[in-house]
Amino acid sequence: MSPSFIYREVTEKEELKRVFQLRYQVYAQSENKAFIRANEQGLDMDSFDAHSKHFVSLNEQTQEIVGYLRVVYSYKKYTNWVSKALLQECGFRYELPSGAEFPFLSYQGVPAEHFECKDRLERQGELLCEVSRLVVHPLYQQAGIAKMIMSSSLSSVSMREDTTYLFINCSPSYEKFYKQLGAENIDGDKRYVANGVEKVTLGLKLDSYALSNYFREQPKPLEKQLYKTHQIVEVI
Image 1: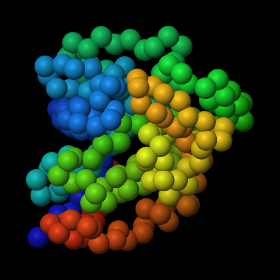
Image 2 (image 1 turned 90 degrees about the horizontal axis):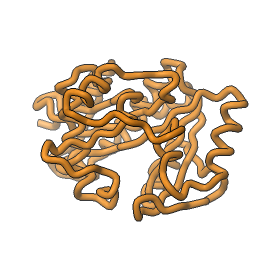
Image 3 (image 1 turned 135 degrees about the vertical axis):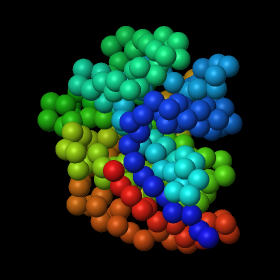
Image 4 (image 1 turned 90 degrees about the vertical axis):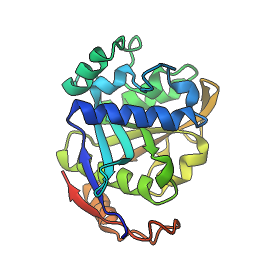
């Protein structure tokens, strides 16, 4: 029997802890391992988690987390008290980088034009956020999960009307994936290196109608034989 997937926002500490475990597991085996802090608990956490909304996709039958991403808000505008409580409970030192409002602006080597782009968009009245830490469980990779959770999360964020423009910071190898959703390079194709990894920053103007249409698209048959079809059975 092919699995169905539930999509929802994470609002409980125990599930959020499972999210941090998955992030650690995936990042530790990827080119982005330099962005996690090694720890005995096997949890990937940072201060931006306390100012993020966390979204997951789960296998309905097993309740296993198969995909995840977070949407990071300005620390001046939003605090996720569940995230903050878990960070403190796990002994994580809660400390934002000096003056940083979004993760990609806290990296070393970020082009000055990126800061100018952010300031310009804010002057135009855009409500800014950043999508980051998109991960897929190793057993479900290349099965369409990333597309599903990304489009679902963008639809959810758009409907809440607290975000109008998203930044996406990624490795150039994933640039094509995000551009399929309508994202574009900010300031041309200016790249930089953070923690030894080449990065590129994309921007996406949220269009609730376009995202809604994208979200309603029927997923294509999956390449993995075990997962030939899937559907989202619940959106919270």
